[in-house]
Amino acid sequence: MSGSSFGKLFQITTWGESHGKGIGVVIDGCPPGIEMNEAIIQKMLDRRRPGGSITSTSRKESDTAKILSGVFEGQTTGTPISIMVENKDAKSKAYNSIANTYRPGHGDFTYQAKYGIRDWRGGGRSSARETVGRVAAGAVANAVLQKENIEIIVHTTALGSVKVETFDQHVVYENMFLCADMLAASRMEDEVNQVRQEGDSLGGIVEIRAKNIPPGLGEPVFDKLDADLAKALMSIGAVKGVEIGSGFGTASMRGSQNNDPISPDGFLTNNSGGILAGISNGDEIIVRVAVKPIPSISIEQKTVDSENNPTRIKIKGRHDISAIPRINVVCEAMMNLVLVDHLLRQQAIK
Image (cartoon, rainbow, N blue to C red; front, side):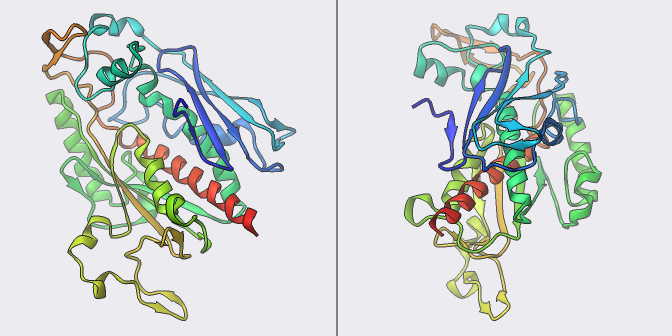
C-alpha cells in the first residue's frame, strides 16, 4: 500500500511530484449523471493556484485541468475519472545546491529514511503541489454535494499572532486571507509584510463549516465521521492539529456545559460540532485545523547533509510565507471528499 488513496465508496488516488511532468488524481466511485466539465474543476483549482496572494510563492502555474476519462457529453459516466494538471514553471536548478542537504521542517530526512531515495526537486511527492489532485477531486465531490444542498464555508480564524474577533460570512471573499473579520484581515496583512522582511514564515488556523448535513452520516467505531474528517485533514502536509466543535475547550468544561440540550426544534448549542457518537446529528459541522509555518525560510538554520555532517542552510527559491490562504480550499476539498463518501455509504445501507 502506497498511502496515496483515500475513501471507501468515493475513492481518490493522487499522483505526481512537484517538479515532474504533471500531477493529478484518479477518482473511482463517482455516481453517473453528475454535471461535470473542466470549467467546474478549474473554478476550484484557481483558488489554490500559486501567486494568488501576498503570502504565496511567485511560482506561476496556470494549473489548467484536463479531464482524461470518466466524463462524456458533460456528465459523469460512473467510470473512473482521471484529471491531470501539467507542471509548467518548475525550476529544479534552484534545488541543486541542497540536493544532499536535509531542510529542517520538510520531509527530506523522513522520505530518505523510508525509501532510501527521494526526489529533492521542490520536495517531490511531499510538496504541497500534491494537493492539486485533492482539490480537483474535491470539485467533483462538491458537484455531488450540491445536489443534496450541502454547503461548505472555509475561513481563516488566525494568522500568526492575529486572531479574528467577529464572523461575517459575506466578507470572506472580500480579502486576500479569506477572513470573516475585515479588521483582522488588515492586521494580518501588516504581519505578513513584517515577516516577509524578516525572511520568516507564519502559521495559522482555518475553520471549515458544513451546512445542511443530514443526520445519520458516519459509521460506528472506526469509521466515525469525525475520525475520518480528522484523518483527511491531518493528511494535508501543513496541518498539525484538528479539533471538532468546542474541541480542546471541552477539556475545561463540565458535562452540564458541554452537553448540547435538545429541543423539539433541534439542538440548542453545538459544542459537538454537529457529530455525536461519530454520526452527524443534522447540525452544522464545525472543524478547525492548525496550520504550521512554511518550513522554507531564508533565515539560516542548522541541519545535516546526507552523510550526517553538520552544516547550515539558507533556503532560496520561490516559497509561500504561509500556507494560508491557499490551504483553505484544500481543507474544503478534504471535507467534500469525506462527506460524499459517507453520503454514498449511508445511501447504500438504505
